[in-house]
Image 1 (cartoon, rainbow, N blue to C red):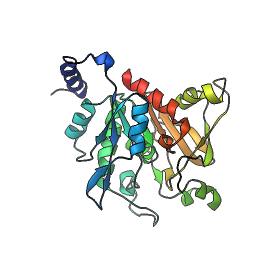
Image 2: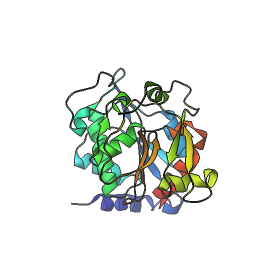
Image 3: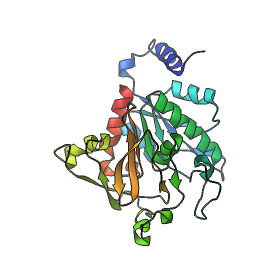
Image 4: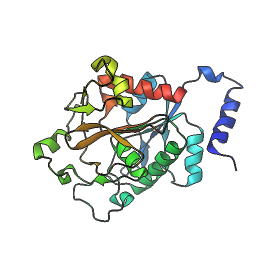
Length: 267
């Protein structure tokens, strides 16, 4: 049975018959939300714009199935995966049966497709960027858990929790995130914000979430925080596996992150 890498190479070999691979833009799959009102798969325009601006070709990934064969076929055609934001993840995905009353927009079909996608992308060292819900998917996929609501975090005040629930416009920052020295994110942003690898690096970000990482997955490390809230994670065992809790696609400072993601996809 052909592996994902073999399938991808076979497809790329066919493509090279009409266009040199070196001139192709990386193909980036963006996970889609399922809109129950319209029964349509949707991807926010801002994700696609950010990928295209960084030099990639965005395509929508429909959560049709969480079967291994479907996930393998999806990944075989891609150079990178963007796990997008959206509704809350079902607590059942990380072993909890009770739901906090604040939980909204759960779609388990999407959850289990993306969990399989995130796990397999990690194993294949496929460049992966998780945004908001996407960061949470990465953590749960690799064995971590979530706080179902920020109010459940010990020591967080109501006014702190409100900082993370930003109304429109999303193009403005809401709070600072402290980026860990010697992390991938630190290297991406330090040219503009910190001269040395060990210098502190605060990053002003937007924030539209009410859930957060509780227990970090064993294969991930925390690389960004805002008080007790985990705001960024990454893995050094994978080519590019980075998740952020904010929405960089709306912000002017998104360019370095998306450029690094696309550079990894080209490689």
